[in-house]
Length: 359
Image (cartoon, rainbow, N blue to C red):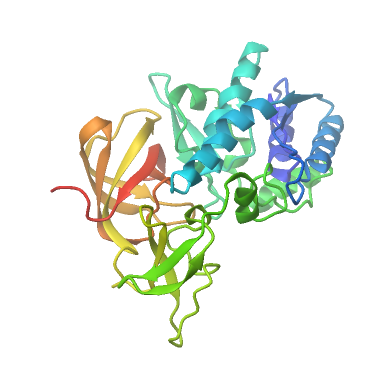
């Protein structure tokens, strides 16, 4: 079963699998949650139509799999709880683990399918013992392995990524060769259930504003905020504090939940709270062997370069990471992906950040 999203990548993936001789069925995951009173819209209806047209063009069966309830329970709740707790969650990573290769994969296996195919730019590598590694995509500009960092061996074993061996222009060419209606469609942006609105507007609909002070590192009041959940570490714009110094800007460097204060400082390496060398990572998930100590390389955010770290275990199965160079705006709630060269080892969630871990 191929997860047809209505985009060019999943369309080309389905076409390639058909061409390779697989028996393919297209499945559209209906996740959109239409809530009365929430501004904006999600183009799910046009995406659904495009996915249906792709399946028709390829001559394969097409199904709409209603996952709205599960999406609300597993992704929307996770997102809102994270922001209420003062962290910045990553719904894209969790959507892959909990939805595409969670309930959607479970549905596919129950229906007798052997695997779920998607348009992700990632690759698989088969080991001699039958286990599977997850590798970076062949296109370094489109590699999406970071978003698969929380997957399990069971999920990777039942995943197929036909687009992962190709460059983006080659994927477009596949869609053109099969004359698919999505061949020239622009790549989608953002999270569908949020639609064409700002994340801040979505959060305001669900989480009441809780205004407070914006202060600098000396405690001097610089302005007012509408709620700590609306801001993230490293944020340079949108906090409303203008800089009196030419060429400089204020950036969010902390949150004082007890006083309901948002803390800002200058966007420069010397600013306390903006850069860190150490952090702890929890909620760990490994595809094959677990990382427990020694040296490793991690990717702290999507499109970031891999960074060398020293790893050691701490309490409750968590890891302490010590970076070889300072990192900007490591953010609790975000995902830390572990790599060995081009191989994704697994991932975890940033928890404490800064010089907070005893040596």
